[in-house]
Image (cartoon, rainbow, N blue to C red; front, side, top):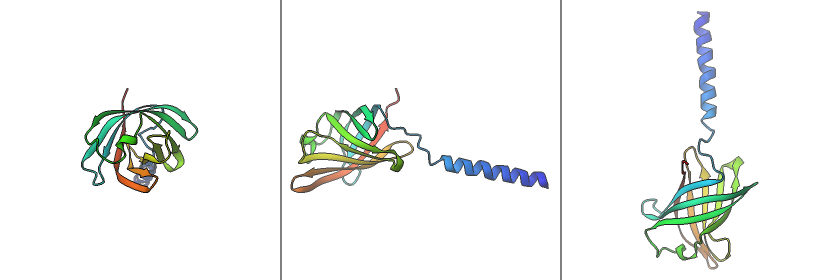
Length: 146
């Protein structure tokens, strides 16, 4: 009977260890290349696909380049102001990433606000201009295995 309790206790310890490790993200965000897909506000229609290359990562600051591999809707608000360079911030403790797709101008930008998940980063993009908020949609970023 004591052996049965020991097995139960061992199982509970093992199970609690597994459940706490599930909070750890297997998706790691740092220097490297990532695929991204921007969707419309419903999350269904693909607007842009591309590759984000993180070249600089110091403290919470990140920077790099954006390559647009497929543009499905060049007429959506904000596309014309997106550049090939980006800057942003990573708040590891909160698993949040914020990206400005055109750091060279202040009044017409597309921003990405994402959460680091277990297998990708997901969030929302929004087009912001001097007169206020414009269009918005969903974004997903996945790691490119090199």
